[in-house]
Length: 100
Image 1 (tube, rainbow, N blue to C red):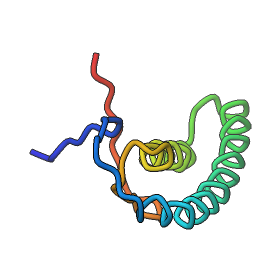
Image 2: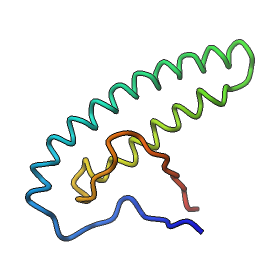
Image 3: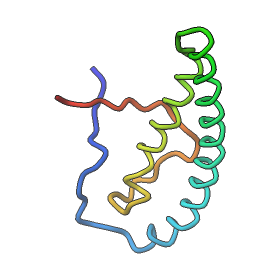
């Protein structure tokens, strides 16, 4: 069984040094998100045309957009000061599960 970690949890302690490092890290994450977002946007347009013409979705295009959304959710707790745990700069596989 895999370990599950809740992404958006409150952490009381915070490092002052990490707050300064975070600025540089934000820039790097922002660049990756910007490039990945442009690619995901292009994939969305291609997916729209694909659905319009063929009446079905393309799995590779869907997976790329899904990866972008998962990466964005993965870095949000760090970007919004919820944790000092730095995420990887480059996208890593992350599973987002909704509990009902």
